[in-house]
Amino acid sequence: MRRGLIGILLTLGLLLPQGGSAQGERARVGAKTVGNLEISLYMWGPQEIVAPKGDPHHRPGEKATHHFDVRVYDLRRRIYIPYLTIKATITDRLGQQTITLQLDPMIGEWIHYGANVTFPRPGSYSILIDVQPPDIARYKHLADVWNTPAQAVFIYEYR
Image 1 (tube, one colour):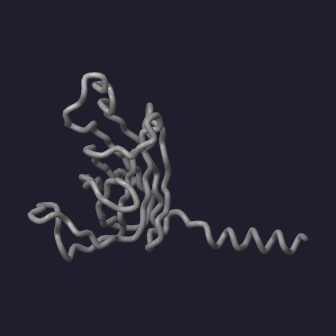
Image 2: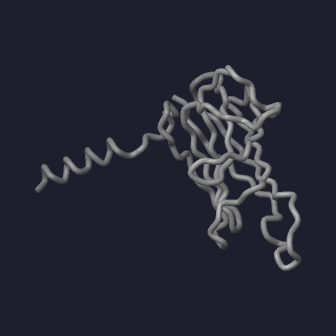
């Protein structure tokens, strides 16, 4: 009985994603609830991205160490939110370097926002995710839906 339990625990430990590695497997850095929104940050190895033609943010051949994946979920309406403007501000824990990224809307398993990024070195980073509401037309009865900015701070250990 005890051997079986230990075997199951070891197997589960090997199957669960390991946070912080960003070497290809998606690792959930965390999730924060802000009002009716759940803001989740995932980090994984750099991804090949096919950008829209004429996109000034697309730079082929750029080296990256990680891919940001931010998902914003409306807990009340049970939907991932489209048309947001999302910015990530990454600061090393020593406060010596700051990187700011505009996260592009992306199609994947669901609507999310992402970008490849190059971390200068392993270490601890503070990541501020700034979510701005969509600038889209609304029906009057939905004027208060997705109209409030939100921010969430995550700590990420790059090893």
